[in-house]
Each structure stands twice: as structure tokens, then as C-alpha cells.
Image (cartoon, one colour):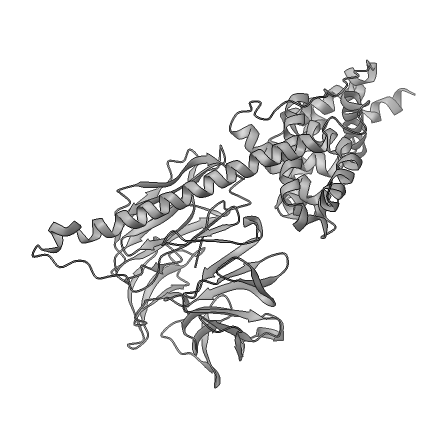
Length: 380
Length: 172
């Protein structure tokens, strides 16, 4: 039995069904009519998403402050977030936390990650081309930068975006500044690997490494080695810069290692958990979000306090419900792109710290295969 | 008609027949194939400006078809788009050979999981390389190899021995 049999028999089967069809049954008008219908549905969905996001944006501050009566009571209002929440990229539109939108000419399947600078520009790392693209607040493409590593790293306050440019240098784009400046690149093991930008402390201080371990600091003066109490990789930095969320190798979990909080001043781990990975700080730095992602999805995502004790958790029922992406919406809410990989249905919701108080931002609808695409990409 | 639409129409006329056959092999059903093709071409039309200059229109539309087919299958197929004005001519040809080896091959293809089936169609009907198949499906070359290997093994298991080419050679 050979592969040729498959080739021949599939050809015969197709010819048997459609032997008389050479041009085709579909006219240009047929296709255009269907396309117009798809476009209308997309616009309706985008408008729905924006309306929902705006409604939530209005709702949440009211809830946080407890309304006018609460503001006069004895309890102080929660501290305002010190970092912005995540934006959402869906169907060529970035919806910011304030409900504003930016149309960007990229398809989600081609986006690695992206960030939204505080000046409104959208910085997108793409696969094809291998590049970083910068879109103006009105959605027009401002620039395309060839890169060695198509990943964008944002500062906690979204005032800086950084990447490794085509000459292995660190490129730093500041909010309000037209062009990026360049500095020494991350370490380049063997002179070939471009290295990683693990965190942006500010426009002149970046933590860099080799994708496994954070090994240095880059400033305009050059690159210097970083010494930590143990080999670790920084995954995020608290808004005040005092704590680093890290991942490090540990025998208790050979595949993922363990997560921890590292105090760079003291040079020690102050909390650790082998129950999560890829921790990111909430905008106020009081909580962390982490999860195990495999095959472009996560079956378990959780919120932790600064002792890395779980506060709230999503756990798949095992029947196809998974998280595609999760990110901080604000200091007390997580934005969750959920999907069911058995049906390829997608939704976008907000949940509280305890994974409660679920609010639908975009109702469940059809989409692509979550193994291959994220229908809602949340900003860095 | 704009230059853009004229370009798209030329592509439509040149490639639609082949794409319809691919859609049929992916779905195993004429109506689903037409629906799949219409939706996929409409999505291609919306992205035409981005895609046509890349010289990879076929790869792009194949990817849409595979993803769309998985979505259609997963949410339970129903006819969602307006029917076309012209129904494709069905021209079934009775072929005794089809009742044997051809039927066995088709039975194997129809029972493959959707992804594996897409691998087989792209590799053996569209004649894509393993790398191109992997690229269209967004999977690794290793997965393409393993899926095709399993499909071939299934075909060997299910084909009556008297229909296998080896057996036929021996009979002569």
C-alpha cells in the first residue's frame, strides 16, 4: 500500500463529485455578498465589545468607590491603579481599557504580542514579517522595524516598549517620542542567539537574558552582568519596581520550574509557589496572575496574593473549557478570553480577584481553533 | 469593476474549481463543501489587499478553509449562507473499482479526525510538501509525518487483502 493510492483515489473521488465543474458555481457577486455579511457581523461584534467595555469601565469605578454614599463613609476608597489595564485586540481592532479603539491592520494569527503606549500608539510584534510594527493612535501604520526577536516587552506603566532589533541591539521606544533609541543588546550566546528582554524597569534600565535566565542589565552606558541569589528569569516587575516576579528551575517541577517573588535589594526570594508559572503583577502590585499555558491554552489560571497564596482560580472542567489568554483589566479584575476547544467558541469576560463576579464583555460566539489562534489577544 | 475586484475575480475563476474539490474532500459533503468554499472565499476577499501581494493566496485560502471547516464541524453544521444561483453539476460515474479500493480509501478518509483528514488532503490531494502542509495547518512537520503515517496504517488495516496492489500483482 503506497502513498500514491491516497493521491490517486482522492483525485478520483473529487473528480467523481465535481468532474463537470471547472469554472465554479460561485460568482464574484456571490462572494462579495457573503463578504459584506461577514463584515457587518464583525462590525456589530466589535461595536458590542466596545459598548460592553465602556459600560464595564463606567461600572467598575462606581463599584470601586461605592458610589456617592460610600465616598462619605468611614472606609477609605481603594488606592487607584498605578498601571494601566490590558487592551484587547480582536478582529483588527484594539479596544483600550477606556473604551477607545484603534483599528490595526494585522490578523491575530500573525500577532506574537503587543503593547499600547500611553501616547496611544500600538506596538505589535508580528510573525510575517518578522518585525515590530508601530501604529499611530488613529490606526495608521507609522513604522515597521525588522527584528531579531519578534517580541515586545513593555514597562509596567506602558510608557516604554522595547525589542531586539535586527542588529541585535536593544531598541527602546518611549511614549511621546517618534523613533526608538538603541542600546547594547542582550547577551548573545554563541554570537547567534539574539537573547531576550525580560523586563523594562524604565527607558534607561532593562533586564536582559538568554530566554532561560535573566543575566544582565542594559542602560545607555552599556550592558552589565546581573548577580542574583540563584539563576532565575524575571517575568514581570512590580509597578514600584521593588519586587520581581520570577521563574526558576526546581526539582519539584522539572518541566516548568517554580514561580517566585524576588526582592532585588535584599537579593532573595521572598515567596515561592510551584503551583503556577509566568506571574504578572496587578496594576497596583498587590496581586499576581499566573497559569500553565500549553498548546496555546491554559487549563488552570489563578490570582495570588504577595505571599503567593491563591486568592481565586479558574480550573478547566476537563470538557474543553480553557483559558486562551488572561490579563489584568484593573487592580481588582482579570480580563479572561475563554474558549471551548471542542466547539471553537469564544468569549471575553471580567472576573474579580476571587474569580467571581463574572461580567460578560463579549458573549460567546464562534471563532478559530484555539490551538492555532487567539481570537482575543490581551496587551502586555 | 475596480482593479482589486478584477484581480479577485480572475483568481476566483482560475482556482475555484480546484478549491471546491478540496473543500469536498475536507468535508465529505457537497453542500458543506459549497458552504465552506463560499465562506472561505468571502474571508479571502476581505483580506485580498493584504494577501494578493504576498504570492501566497492559495496557502492563505487553504488555511481559512481548514480552520473554517473545523469550526463548522465543531459547532454542528447548518446551512448559514445564502444558496448560490447555480448548483454544481453532480456527475456520478459508476466505477466498479470505486466499490473496492476507492471505497476503502474514502472510508478511511471519512473516519479520520478532522485535523488528520486535513493533513491527508493537503499532502496527497493538494500535493503540498510536509513543510507546506505544516505551515498551512499551523502544526509541526513531525505532526504531519505522524498523521500521515497513521492514516496510511489505517488504510492498510481496512483494505481487503484482495484489493491491495500487492495482491493484484501476485494474481497476475
